Image (tube, rainbow, N blue to C red; front, side, top):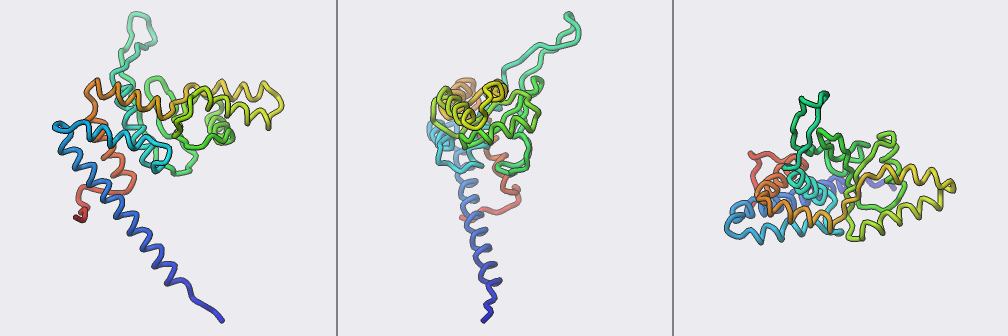
Length: 227
């Protein structure tokens, strides 16, 4: 006997999409409500954004929150550069987000100019993921933003230790490890969030989270959010 499951599968997919859309709409609505109280009740906004920096939070929201915080953490930092000693340019550090979150498109998540730093967001401690990202950019230095509360030294030791079990030649592992320019874990993100708040960027960070969330979920200002 033959059963046609197409209609049932379509119903399941439609219900899944609707559930996801409803959840996203509630999230956007909550963000916009926080916009309204950012000046009067900043602590509630701080606590909400801080809740997005957790090991169990949705990977897309973690990446968006991480980007928004780091963008304004680096915002007032600047470097001097130029081709002649007496003709140097002063330029602020700018962090740009590339592509969609969790896209598995082989790209790099954030890029900084004018330093040319690369940032990759991840939630795994599997060394193969790190080494693959390093290979993508031909062993160019890269910073990893990791959704973990583990201390940075422990993270690095775990990556190196597991890699050493596969690569018996120490020089190979060391070469990859030297390509890790910096590790930013959740405690580091929280410190940088606090520093950004002191600089007066709480509103900017919240607005950036809203902008990036709308881009991520194909949301426009003309879309209606159900009450």
